[in-house]
Length: 193
Length: 193
DNA sequence: GGTTTTACATAACAGTCGTTATAAATAGCT
DNA sequence: AGCTATTTATAACGACTGTTATGTAAAACC
Image (cartoon, rainbow over all chains, first blue to last red; front, side):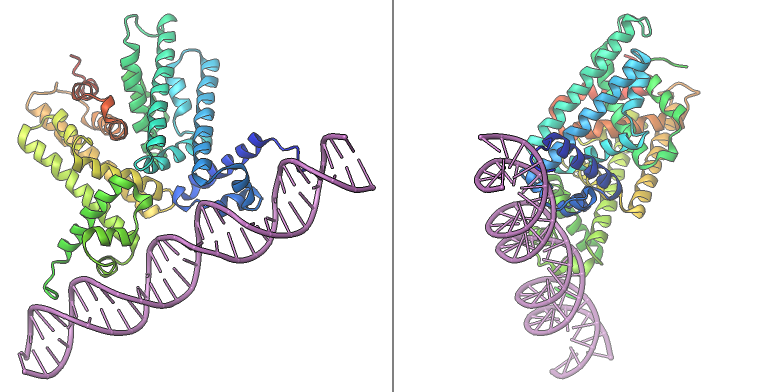
């Protein structure tokens, strides 16, 4: 089946394999050969569909960002402007979400020496804030949150807390019950229960 | 000056050099040769004072933990049981604190494939919670926080938020003013201003 | 003061990495 | 059917990597 090959499909397949390897053994142990072997190909898929390893990882990073954003959108469709549900969809509570966080964390080390990656990550943080702010505003409009809520400030706090939550949940899942997670998020929103 | 050499002093010197290299170029770019050269020695210091590279990094990790705990203790001595001051002492707002967070973040990738490291990191999180809980209880005793405060729950939230704050401040310091940081911490404590 | 222990340097080893050059195989196009 | 463009495999290259074996110098100890 050469010739008619959907490049994006191949790249996505590589990204999926890379993600599962990273969440299992870490980015440090990820080699081009391992990715190729796990994908059932030779090393040529990587060299043929990506300029180099760094570009491959950038693709994997963006792949994870898109997928995660999709999960949030799904939660939005399912539960409406429910801030808790949206953030839970982002947290590493499912195998897929764990994969996304795994590469984000792993690339935090790279970004110390890669200004382009660092800039993109900072941009994604702001994107996440805007996304959450929009959910907050929707919740206010639906009367689920009190009017006069400072959505930008709340979104900033929520994204930051989600970041901290994600790291701790990723490495010590047993330490966090679903209810505990919800309590933390609810407190941040201002819903003392 | 052979023979009479303080091993811990040598190890600390190596750790200091390794930290500055990690915060500058990332753990991925850290090699035994670079550490040795930057320390002004041959690669023998590493092989002579550490069993292998992994042990060296574990030492650097613990070195950073001890130093960070010391900074918190200093803040405690200077400001009393001031939760905001203690957490600010922990956040990557100074070059030294930035170094500590740099290796913690970098080792998050390793801990996915190193159960021993993962266990130690989880332990440190709980230590941090206990430390913060003690500060909170001190603050309650001094009347700086309302009586009846759930110190364990508050400490858990504070450590998690500090984690998220640290990551974002480390990679986008310009995005966080000192006042903004304090506001986030104060909100967590329950001090709405 | 010779001996021995320790600190450090040098250098080689074996392995693995990302990358690339070359070649084979496949299917679309004329 | 033959040509061509593309996909994939194979294999080699050069540049590292961590580790270790060997050698040298210096201070402490008897």
